Length: 498
Image 1 (cartoon, rainbow, N blue to C red):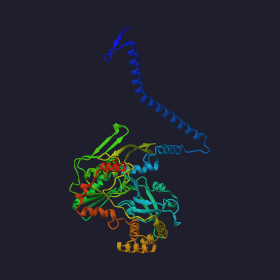
Image 2: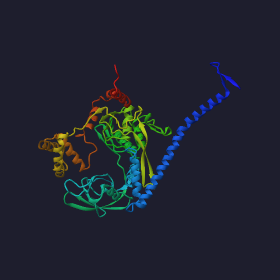
Image 3: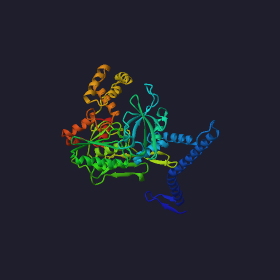
């Protein structure tokens, strides 16, 4: 029998034993390598099984349900349930109306009449019909040129009462191909009613508002569309023409939009370097986004960014990049905390589709703020009514005194508003300054609202004060990156033993 010797011990083993041992080792290796493949095949087989069952149930409902059912209804219900099962509020099925709204945002324009509108859900508390109310016309659009005002009621659209229409129905009738007629009946005040015929046009989704506050440029970004960067650059050009010395970038209540638009906004303020990175389950789909090596706003211009609980997604990308790169000081409240990236995939000839989370984004200091948010460098909150005040406030709202005051005094001055706020405060035992702000909000709702309201906006007041006090550079030296803040928070949650 052939033999071989173990070099370490001098022991002899039969050659056949080594063949058996090597075969066992190879089997173990192949088995280990095949486990993921087998698991994948098992999941694939399970997926096919579920798909088959779903098809069978779909067919069974079509044949046996007590009433005939539109297959589209079953399809949309199944799709909605499938995405709901993910437990992700940002991954969902998009029916035709939602897909159309999303396309409006991603394309930056739509066919319509140019009116911001609102509509009560269900019956009004005062028993009046739930007509559509105009919040504001968009400048230089058919609705604006026709003289429709904030506070006007649209009581009919093409002969249909808006009282019985859902908001989705209303939008479907106001929007559509440019060049088509839309006939409205407008009610202004208690008695005045008149017809208006509008010709739909291409409406650009409003994305910026801007003005000067002394020598400070104020730029408010409403959302991130393909036009946001262009409109922001126009604002910067306007500021430069007026020799601005500082900038307030207002991202409050900006729910987000396009990632590329957010990166483009950062290009305006950052001279090269990292803006944001995205990380996916599939490493090959990870991406890094850098600013261009040029900037419209020089490093000598102090920047204060305003954020609040309504600042989400793309607006958090901008705020996070400017904070982590040491370019801006943040004022306001902690942001919403949406640190994920969604892709939209069309279905059924682009009429429906779905939106699904494919990655998470990371700020330049390599943190993800999902469900955490971005804390401001200086927290400033609006005063709020206490729970004890709720019943008194509810009585005030029910009695309709604030809308009645604005109806009688549409051009009320700040002094008149404050005087009325004090009167209400005495009558209802509520904070007069908060009531004055409610009165101003009602005035803004029923007129063309100003670009900013320095009188009652305490967060904007603080931003302007920081710039004017001259301590901006010192404050920036104490500002910390999001990574440093998260590490500090982690140490506070898990203190080290001593």
